[in-house]
Length: 162
Image (tube, rainbow, N blue to C red; front, side, top):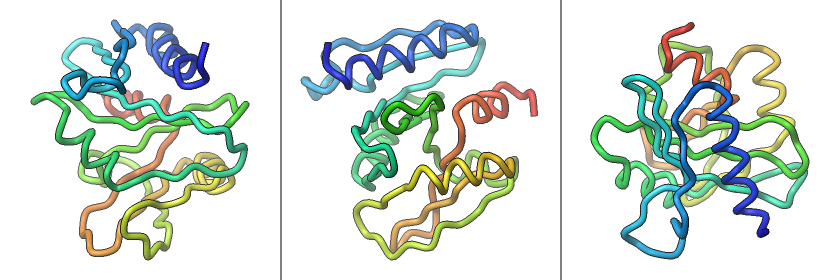
């Protein structure tokens, strides 16, 4: 089985263990009409997830285009999430719009001058997580940013438990 497919199942299984109804969307990257890799819901909370796997143990590149596409494709009422992990790293991380979390968690801004993609180092997200913070990234020219946070913490916040 391809690495990306295993990762999509890993994300789905994580959500199932947390009590979500979750399903992997087959062929999601192959056809323009099929949106998101994983769809999940729990009560009124609905998630549309783009799962990104990497072979790197130390850094992942997140593109502005992928985040904008996910936001456009999310149906009304859905929370668009880009979920990733590092190679052979046990934790899952999510990238979500700053507007969703800015008042709910302390943010640590990552200085960047990037226009189209930004590299996120494992060391940065692990350190922010240890201090119960999230990493804030902004692309050049954007006033609104994106928050990188551990997936379990994000779900706890979205479910109203924090």
